[in-house]
Image 1 (cartoon, rainbow, N blue to C red):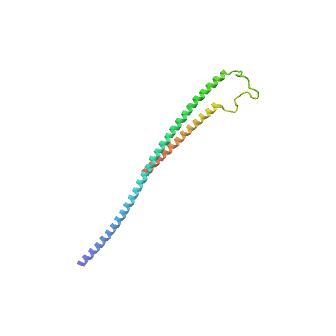
Image 2 (tube, rainbow, N blue to C red):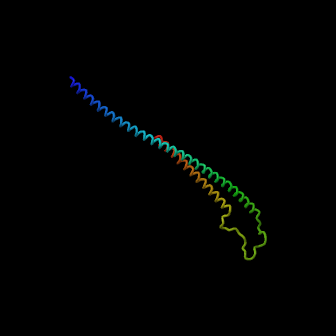
Image 3 (cartoon, rainbow, N blue to C red):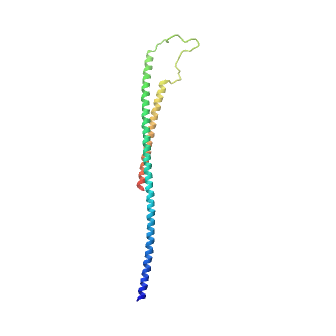
Amino acid sequence: FCVDEFNTNQLQTETKEREKMDLIAKIEDLEMTITTLTEEIDALKAEIAEMQVQMKRAGEDREKQNKEFQTTVSDQRSVQQLLKKALDFLQDFYAKKASFAQQEPAGPPPPAGFKEYKNNAQSGGVMQLIQQIIDDAKAMEAEAIRSEEDSQKAYEDFVKETNASIEAK
């Protein structure tokens, strides 16, 4: 009877030892998994923090771009307005001058060797130059608006993608 009990006891002890070893191995495996997951979580938190910093910087850059845009558009509109007033003034001035123009030249005829004064037919004149500058200012304003729209869209896409990436992590 004692021998049977010893054998049974020894068999149970060996079985329990095997179970203990299996459980120790499982604990070590789970601890390793916990360590790995903790490291991955820390890495993801660092990535999220970096993305948030990038979003903040992008927001600050966007504010600067928008301020430059506002300044550019304001400047171009001011230039257009000012030049339009100058152009209107010159048109009025030349219109009045043409109506008061005399048929006979004022003063004596040109001395010998000099030709009569005439406007250069190839020159565009000041008014055409001012009109060209106004057109250029309008084109620059339109380009600034297009650029602003593109920048705003790119910023919105970046924020949307970054937020989606943060949510995914």
